[in-house]
Each structure stands twice: as structure tokens, then as C-alpha cells.
Amino acid sequence: MSANSRTLSSWISLVSLFALLACVAIWEVKRQSSLERTAPTPAAKGLVDCPEHLPQPDIRPVGIGLKDVTTQLGVHFHHVIGPLGTYFMPESIGCGGALADFNGDGSLDLFLVNAGQSPKAVSPLDSIPGNQIWLQTNDGMFVESTVQSALGDKGYGSGCAVGDVNNDNALDVFVSNYGCDQLYLNDGTGRFENVTESVGIAESAWGTCAAFFDYDRDGWLDLIVINYTHDPEYDHSIACGFRAGLVSYCGPHKFQPTVDCLYHNDGYVEQSDGSMTLRFTDVTEAAGLSECRSYGFGVLVADYTRDGWPDIFVANDGAANLLWVNQKDGTFIEEGVERGVAYNERGNAEAGMGTALGDVNGDGTLDLVVSHLSTESTTLYLGGADGSFVDSTKSHSLDGPTMQHTGWGVALVDLNHDGFLDCPMVNGLVVPCHSGFPFHGEDEFQVRHDQIDDPQAYWLDYADRNVLMMGHSLKQMESRPELGGDFCAAIGSGRSLIHGDIDSDGDVDLVVTNCGGPAKIYRNELVREGHWLIISAWDPVLRRDAYGAEITLEGSAKTLVGLLNPAGSYLASNEPVVHFGLGEMVQYDRIRVRWPDGPVETSLEEFDGGVADRRLRLIRGEGRLLP
Image (cartoon, helix red, strand yellow):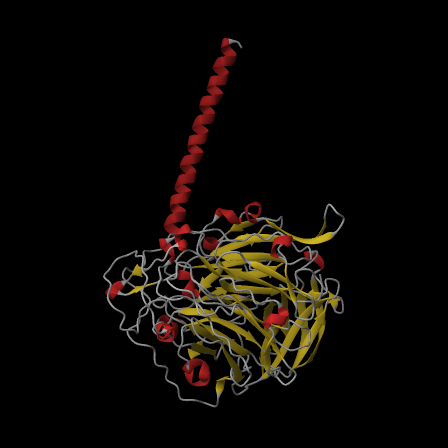
């Protein structure tokens, strides 16, 4: 090389170096500016989930409201966990369940997840009943069918997801566990086969919520599993000290965060012997989800950016929420901060638990509700047409009534059919604030083996009351415990809330699970203030319900929007329908469905209007395609 060439090469290298340094400097300025705009303000110190007294609702019954019919319907399920005294944190999150028609007879059945033996417990449990399924009979009663169904796994359960993963017109069940998760295929009669290993699912972190959805629109339901932690410390018995000397379960930041897991449903794949086998592939890293680690509790899948592709919202415990935006190529980019759902209006990350989705303010876009610890309130994020969200908790009066409660399961449903969404919330503490709990000092991290002689009394020390927020306009909700009946009068450490029309009378009923206590069924006997419509969306080619279908109902006075996706609340799978309270509307003009599979350009279909107060099944291809 000549001297001139060497000089030129050196000059180019020097210029490139200066350019690189300039780019780095500009990037750092932008990063610091972004941090100044988005970083959460420090949370107040010393605040724990510990109200001074068990909240006393002002219950002046108006009618019957939400009536406890558990015993009347023949259901007797008890959340079994322990033995207590080691403060194994998964004990405190409870278990969930599902409402779905598992045997194809047209009636809703009930699946309930159970826990079991806590690691390092000082003694064995007397019995471990495992998960249970209750089938509804022709007379509206329930009969346990766990043995016949083969769903009675005795793993350490948390939540579940329900969906038809092999497109055979039968609802399958996924159970998230502390440990190995499980997938069961339904033969169509309510009998299940555990296919976890054969399909390629190998999830072993502590799974909480899960959801089925078709992220690549190929016609096969994929699976997102939300994980809390994968920390080896959970092999030990650990407790944490709190203000006033209380000792209880540790919060998330004592442990390592982890990634959520995304599985792609490959459909039936030919094996080396020529047979066809259903397969799932772990695409967490390839899809980009491995870039964020957190403590996940809740998940809601919807088209938040309004481009026809499903996105993933994750509610995290004590960390920023995540919004994974679908890039339409099998990958996702996290945009929680940019779209306004990472923090509350004060810039604080909250203890996200339960989640619900619905059009609260009637503007045609879906809004988010996230439940939290006491002192944080339940948060309402109103969605905009551009895919952004604004914390509107105070303007809708959700802050005051929910601030003193620790919320878990939550829903946005029209319980009285007046045309406005209501918000029932299930609550339960994570610190035994109402007990005469002995002071053990202010140690932050302890190994304990306390003797707990009365498990029922133990969980009553974690008791809270449920809250019923009733919508009375598009801008306001108010606490109405007198309408809640048995639901608001109940005392327990509530966790999951599951909703569906159990008795097929057109309104929404509720199921509640409790830590260390019984599951409860609440029949909706509120006075109806309007009409209703329950809609399912069926794809005859895929032979299953169209999970992810966005349904818009138009009438002369209003337009209503709903999403067909049973995942939501907390550790739960709800009835896979869209329920509309219509108010005074006795008939509607038209329904539009944005189907979740196939080309986006040909996914919008319109169906003729009709009368209210009925169940309606929309079948893809029987309407008119719209551009």
C-alpha cells in the first residue's frame, strides 16, 4: 500500500471514529431526555397493604343483587394449600378457573384450578384434591366429573386458558403451574388427554395467567404464558418483615424477574414415521419477548394499535406494565411507555394483578382496567383511536372506592343492562393486617417454620371485601355495595373472578375463588334496566370460535364494541362470548365483525340488524364483506 493510500485510510478511520462518537453522544442525550419524560417518580416509602380495619360496606340491600347460589347448585370446591407457616409466596396468589362448555351440551361448565403441597412445608397435607371440573346438568345443577375427565392434576396450580388448539370443535385446557405447565386436549365429550410433552411445551417457570390467540393470523391458536419468577430462592421457606413488625409473604423485588413465554402453534406436523402430531414451538426469543424481564400477573390480548393484528398487554407486579406491539412478521416491540400504559398518571409503576377490557366511555375504542394493591387504587386507561392510552382513573371516580382494597380479579361487564359497563372487583390482602399477628421485628428476609393450627382463621386475617362499581354514565362509576348483595357482603381473601351467563337467562353471573377457602358462585339477580344481546362468532372453516374477533353493534342511539377473547380478569378464562347491555335499545341496525384470522384486507364482515334479548351466533361468510 502506498503512503498516500495509508494516509487516506487513516483519515477515513479518524472521520468514522468522530462520527461514531457524535452518534453515541446524540443517542445519550435522547436517552436521558426520554428518561426524564418517562421515569416513574419514587413511590412513598413505608406503605404496605395494611388498612387499619376490615372495610365495612354500607350495605342497604336493594333487591337481592348478586346472590350466593354455590350450595344450591351443588358445587363444593376448596382451595387447598400448605401446610402454612413457611410463607411460600405462591400460596398467596391463589388459583383461578374457567367457565366454558367442555362437553358440548350447550351449558356452561366450571373448571377450578387447585394448588397443593408447599415445598419445604414442615408436614404433609392431609389430602391434595387437585384441579376439579364441574359439569352442568339439564336442571342447572353441577356434578363433579374430575375423574371421568382426567383433568384432576395435583400439580401446584395457578391459572388456566381455554381454547380449541387443534381446530376440532372442542375446547382444550392449559393449566399454568408453579413448576411444569400442562396442556390437555378435549375429545369433544369432556374427556381430556395430557399432551404437554408430545406437543413440545416445556414451560417450568412459575406461570400465572395465560391466553390463547392467533398472533400471526394463520388460523391456529398460539399461547402466551405470563411468568412471575424463575428464582431458585423459591425452593426455600422465606418470609419478609413489614411495618409494625408484621411478617408475611415477600413481595416481588426479593426475587429475580423472568421472561414471559410465547408458543407458536405449528398445527399438525408430519413425523418421521409418517404420523401427524400437533406441535408448539417456543418462539419467545425469536419474537422479541425475551428482551424484557418482569413479574407478570395479568394478560390481555387485543388489537390495541388498530391495525388488525393482536398485541399483548402484560400487567406486572411492582414493575412497569408491558405492551408488546405486533410487527406483523412474527416479532413484537415493547411500547408500554410510548402508549401510556406502563405507569399511572403520576409516573409510578404499580402492583398490577387483574385486567379487564371494554369500551367504558363509548367512543368505539377498547379501554383497560388494572387492579392493584391498596394505596394504589384500580387504574383505568382510556384508549384512543391512535393506539395510545390515558390514565382516567380519577375522572371516572375509580380511585376513592378502590384505594383501600387490594384488587385481584376484575371485569368490565354490564350487569344490569343499562348500557353502561360495570366493574366488579375481587379483593384480598397480602399482609395479615387484621390479626393479632405476633411482632417478629423488622427483618427484611427470614426463613420461618411457624405453626399454624387454624388455616381458616389464618386466611381470614388476609380478608378483604369485594367492590362493585356501577356505571351510570359514559364518564362516571360509583361504588354500589347495596346492589352487590352476597358478593359485596362476603368476607374472604378473594383472588380470581370468572364471568359468564351460567343459568342462560341473558345476564352475567360471577364465580369467585378464595385463598384457602371455598369457590363461590353468584347469580345475577339485579333489576334489569334494559335489554341485552349475547354474541358468539364462529369460523366454519377452522371449526372453532373466532378468538380475537372484534364485534361492533350499531343502533339508532349508540354504538357498542366488544372483543371475543375469554382470557382476562386474574388467572381466569371467561365465557367465550361478547355480552352487550343495550339499555332501551330493543333492536339494532347492524353488526360488524373484524375476524382475527386470514388476510386483514378481507377480514371485515357486516351482518344485518335484528331484535334484542337473545343469543346470536355469527357465522363467518354469511354476512357481507366490507373493504
